[in-house]
Length: 313
Image (cartoon, rainbow, N blue to C red; front, top):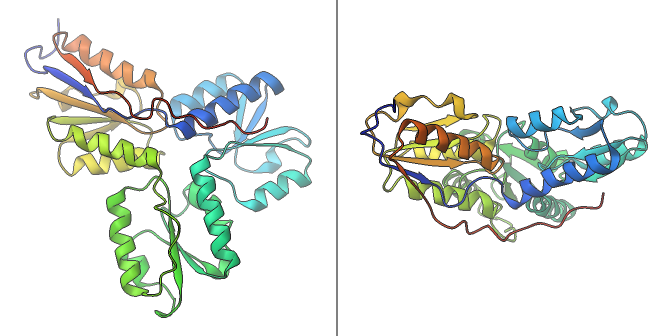
């Protein structure tokens, strides 16, 4: 018997969700590297922040490591999509490791910007989450005497930089626009001599997913966000939707609590940029089993034709 079968009438999927081009590319890199080099294949840091993806690769013989000393000499190592600091490339080369760089091209763009600023000796403020793998990688492209990392307004106020110092800023790609706009405004207020970077550092995939998720809040009653807690962009989706509607985040379909949707007619489902489509479909299937009369809606994904070239294997 269906649960609360008279309640949910519509299930709306965010138009843009699931794998972004950078994640799809990184996963394909690991798949092709497995075919060519066989297991065990070493990957520094989780290739993307999703438990389903990681568990699937581990079953195939992928070994995720944090320290390059864990990789036997002269073996192959894949660097994750989040980006890797230059010193890690140097360490790998010294140990004779074959490097496959799966860094997302949009993160690589931030690295190039960081290098340009550093070459000009510009003091650079990184906006993002301290310890996040992307931030660790980007920090490696900026000399310590030029680098300052901020997470919030209090960090900006505490910066030991003279107000007349020319500064620039770069942001973690997976932050929300609302988060960065507020902090960028504070930086500009404190440091009037801003050295402008080329464009916004928020990647288009992050922005597209945020826009699509927020669109759901206009007509849905409750939002389910699919993704792992380690995923920064997924957490941002949850925070954004939570400003408008009851919002819950799950890593797997079996974590769905039907009490969350009880009494609502329209359920919205969105997901982070590293979530496989099958996870989303499993959530839909669970809801449809409980509410068989519910109709499923989704507009066309504007990213459906976007692909990134693969790095050399």
